[in-house]
Image (tube, rainbow, N blue to C red; front, side):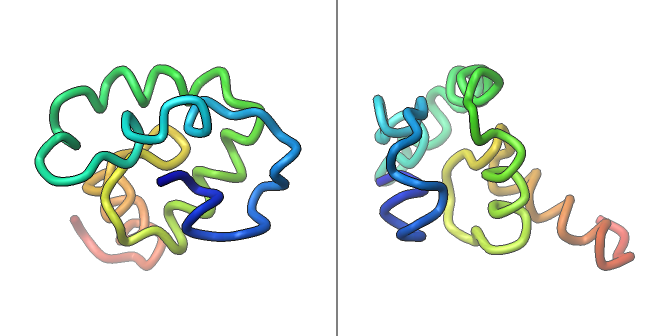
Length: 87
């Protein structure tokens, strides 16, 4: 699964992204999520849609996985900070 599967049209499919190359690394099924998030986070740094993906992830992505270099707990904290809630 990739950002493209979860939100069709974001970002445009013409853009090559690391999550398209290895979706299981970014959005693994089951407990695999905790095996290599650091590798997925590192690959996000070279993504051409890094900032848009991060913003989308913080605002919309409640699922697990790595979005814009942030894990699910990091996105929850970022969302709470935006809302003025202590994490």
